[in-house]
Amino acid sequence: MGGGARYPYPKHVWSPAGGWWSRPANWKSNTVITFAGILAVAYGVWTVSAEREVRHVKPDRPIPSMIWAKQFRDQEAKDN
Image 1: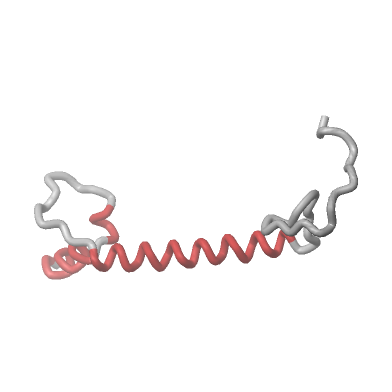
Image 2: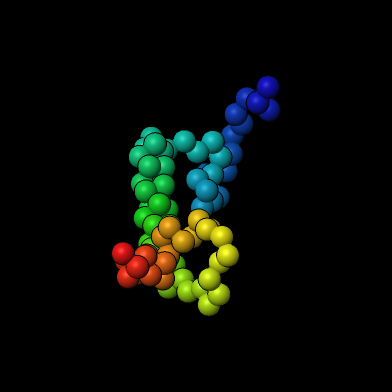
């Protein structure tokens, strides 16, 4: 399994993915940094989206976005 032994490959070919049999020594830290970046961007998008979300018609039953949407948090604070 695995397609056979490694064979000689051209050294002058450049690949953005790292080329043949790429296994950088710091792949674990690169992966952690990448996922941390993805999570930071997702959190930022989530926050901006929750601040700008507006529903013109109030839902007839509770929906999940009512927990984090600014419109419903402000309305709940006024009611209390």
